[in-house]
Length: 440
Ligand SMILES: [Zn+2]
Image (tube, rainbow, N blue to C red; front, side, top):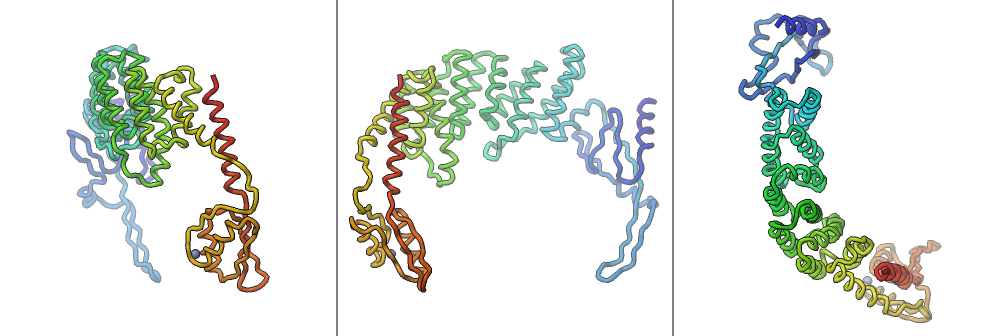
């Protein structure tokens, strides 16, 4: 006790002004209002006490202009908050999940440096703190973000270090399974699973796939692949079936924005799903390949399946998988059909009519477009009409400029070879992709 009194006195000596916080030794300083589980709410400053206190100084300023008068009382207060040592972890836990996991990491280092005794007080306290962390873990999957991925990994690593399988079991079955699995968790999660029986590990993996495949198909497929490699495929059929069901489920109507966001996810899904299902059952993998082909909106040939095949065909482990061969065959047919189409630079000035409007002015441009002898069209009109014509012809092979010599200005439309150049670039790319996919 005398040591504590000395520390308190040392701390008080440092206080220079009101509101200053100083701490030393094991003393923790907290915000003015403190809720301690099992102890209650401690409110600072203690207002009843203030009523009876004389302020340490008074400041009074008269009203000036628009500003009213001010009357400030300043109080000098010191508080010594004491709680039972056995409730220390309750207090730490209230600093939040991130801080608590950080604190647990420090405890872990201390325990390892002090000889890793199973019954040591620090390990017992660590178990208490871990329990609090799990109790506080977010429970709503829809609002959960990947922001706790790193903390999840740290927490699982600490639980492994402390050999606290009881809390690890709770964390896996309650938090990771139901709420917070992301691909970033996979390496540490696999370490955790090796601490339990294979049957239990496979149950956890199946539960994760059921809960998360819809939004994280690639991550779940990769997890299944790695678990089969780590253990074996026995008892994992329900997990594999769930992957297939997820791919087969009707695609929700997505906005263009979400289609763009999800394009990367779709590509990753193809890359991960086929190898994962191949190690489970080749027939399932072929079923997945067929489903990818059928869902051309979610897995478009040029944007998803072609780049996926280029990557899978480059991988020594994946290029000869039956499902990859099946998809590659379809991608090759698609490429060869496009390559077989005629491609020649325009021989005259005829261009395809892609006008989107049928008004008289636009139809004049339409006639100009299909004329083999005319290269340029002049349209003298007010700004609104020029603008309309330009909008209506935006898909056509035309360059635009405006001549401003007299009013109204003249819109000059010149034919170009944009469609041919686009096809030419596509052809070069198709030939390159075809060579890559036929390379032995
Ligand atoms: Zn028009």
